[in-house]
Image (tube, rainbow, N blue to C red; front, side):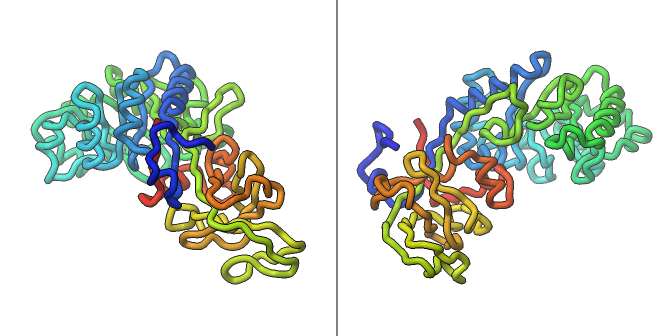
Length: 363
């Protein structure tokens, strides 16, 4: 790839891997999800530093595109996001409040998501501010039991929640029976708060149809080019991860590649060693499985992934295989979910696992 116009000499010469973050593509993906359910508000989940791509820059881009509601996991993420966005957008904190942060929630205009009776009691004693209520409808991970409505309904109403929410366990499996079970359970819970907006769907739930959209959807991984959308929805890749070739050489048939000699060459092969490894966030499970792309040509990873190095077969890209050339490991050719599947994981983990050693480059 050609270098960005404003790149410094140090950046161009560095052997560090770099991730080009395509902010305009993140905005385009948000707009694509927003069009799916036009009667619902489309929020944005930007926890884990915007899924590893930079929460401040991602959120400001989405705000310019029209997004006004954001979700993070931790209080500290919320205060940092408030500094980035200023006052105006609503910021929900999914993991809810702790006693030491109650006043700051109000000062920073953060909205905690209450997921336990202990959090409900804590917030009831706090300086009054907006809150959301999260009910568990079948995931058994986090959330209030629906039974709390039988003995604490009045208390919950006194909190004047601004959102009632739950989370699908099998949204990425459209035909799974639990989706309908959770929909029915959540519909009944939401009916206890008829004047309060409701939210059930994260990224995959957005694809399940109008019944699952309610008043607000919460896409996360879909904004960053992940998930498995229907054919009618086109998501753009949002990050191009490149790593520099350090050396190119030929190894003979019968020789092995990498630690523990897990790959034996069947023929003389042109190999390249790339400055990328599990210290950069590339899963070790991607050994003998991931594919790098050199000028669009697939170059399979051979052998184990080391801390700082990966070896690839460049036999089909010998003209481009030169020291200093950059190999794509995520991007238009190395698609996020396909690479994740090769490594036996998900796009979530590939993105959020990118370490600080990977240089982020923005347009």
